[in-house]
Length: 217
Image (cartoon, rainbow, N blue to C red; front, top):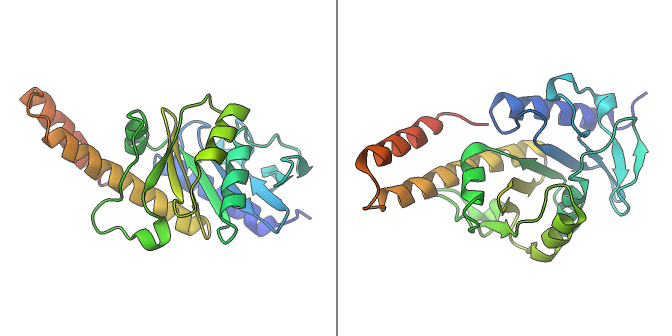
């Protein structure tokens, strides 16, 4: 019998949902879910999301990142999910994505404010910024741990992607959608204010952003 089978199945299902909606691409994107005080389940490394089943989701120790159940190799970003889970004890789920518009904002190395109508009560003060460090490295994990803030539950990782923490995977998926909406609004506003930008290019970019609003999780 697979331990924590329900949670592991939920992770597999969420991977497919996020891949279907453009938040995960290829094998880019990963998930961590707290199981109890000492354990979390994470996505396997470099695995086709559409092939993942509950037995393919490894369980690791939050403190040591050592695998304690499962045969697959845990995601290389497991340390980031452990940071999120340790920083926010009341929140169980952490998701890292490469969603298109928010990842474009991550290239600007700027904090992203929440868009109009999006509550900060559950989402935190803003979408914070983690300084660039190479993906999957201890350097990124250390920078992440240093930059994390008590009332910021979502972050842009500079020149990389997005990570957020929520009560559960459904709430985290909703937050990802709100991050993408906020990024669309932020970028649209900036482009509209660029008076020196070629008008045809400006119109093309704004139309592309408008089209992207109908997509996502």
